[in-house]
Image: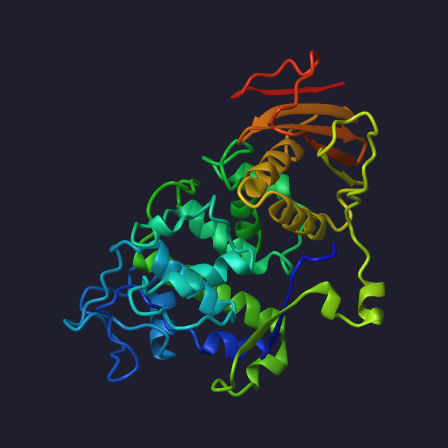
Length: 360
C-alpha cells in the first residue's frame, strides 16, 4: 500500500458491529421499545417478509407509530448511508447543532472510501437513493472479502447492466456476494429508487455475509461492546508492518517522454489478486485526484471488462473530467497514464466525449 493511504482498524468483531445496526429509514420510525413483530401492511407473501421480520425480531428495525412498515416508501441517501456505515462498524460523531443529521455518517463514508463527493454530494442527503448508489456503497463495504472468478458470467445474467453502466463493477461484486439479487425478469434497474423493503433486505444480507465471514468468534461477541475505529497512516505503522506490505501497483514513472505531472500506474498479472489491485488502484487515484479519481477508476474498469476478441494488446483513449486518460492493455496487465489537462499531442486524436478503443 502506498505511503499516506489510510488503513482502517476496527477494535471490535463483526457481530458487535452488526448487532448495533438500527435501520433508520424515517425520522418518525419507532425504535427499540415496544417493537411489534407484525406490521399491518406486510403480508407473509411479501418477497422481503423474512428479511424484514428477521431484523425486526433482532430489534434492528421497527415500523411507524400506526403499526405499518410501508415497504414501498423510498429511502434517502442519508438514511441508507447511516445504515451502511453502522453496518460496517464505522464510528461517527453526533451532528453539530445546525448540521444535517446525516452529515457525520456521510463524512464517515467519505473518509472510509465507501464513495466520493463526485459520487454522492451533500445535496443528495435528503434525496431518494437509487439502486446503483446502493450497490456502490454495499460493494465497497465487502470489497476486501468478495472474490470470485465468474465476473463475466454474473454480468451476462443482469439484463440491463453492461460495461457501459455506471458502477457496473460494484453491481457485479454485490451480485457475486449474494447481497443483490435483482428482479425476476433478470434486470437490476440501477436508476430506480430504493424502497424500505429493498433496503432492509440488502442490509440483512450484508449482515449475514459479514457475520459468516467473521466466523465463530463473532457469534460470541458481546453486542454491547464499544466500537472504536482509528485511522492509521503508514508513518504510524511499525517498521516490520511496513516491510510486509508490498504495493500491488507500480506508480513509478515508466515513460520518460511524458509531460511533467503525468500520473502513471502499471498493473501486471492483473487477474492475480484482481480485487486487491482494483481496491489499491482506486485508493491511489482518489488520493492523487480527489474529485476525478473515482471517474478515472470507472473508466479503467469499463475498459478492463471489454471483450478484446482474444487480442493481447489494446488501447483506450478518452477525456475524464478534463483529463486525457490513456490505458494500454499489454497481455495480462495494464499501463495507465493520466496526462495534465493542458496536454496536447497531434497523435491523441480524441475529442472530449469520445472513447476511442481498439485491440490489435
